[in-house]
Length: 144
Figure 1 (cartoon, rainbow, N blue to C red):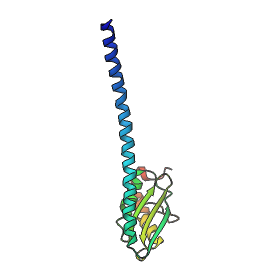
Figure 2 (spheres, helix red, strand yellow):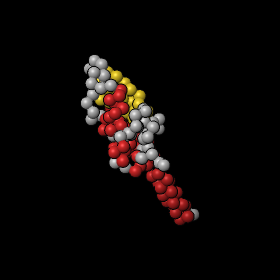
Figure 3 (cartoon, rainbow, N blue to C red):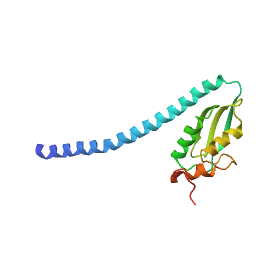
């Protein structure tokens, strides 16, 4: 009797161990997603602190109807933040919206839109610069 229980016990432990590994990956992914959200929130708070020092701070919600993927999001956030007068950028891929905080003494909304268009993306009603759009990766181009 003892000999027949031992193999069952070992098989059960192996099965539980194998199933638990998949759960750990799900937990790790969830933790990673939460860490990314916390990092984004922290970045926005840091930029909000920087904005407190700007006399003529402005916020724009810019429609980004041509963004397609995370590459687009990264290109806009990374490219726009290099523009003088931009304080922070956060792109909502699902909502196809950009939240841009900027120094109103340095830039206007039209300047922000043009900076996005220069990166190859439509910003509100301002169309993307054709040569910049042409150089985007295929994943960032609007499906035809």
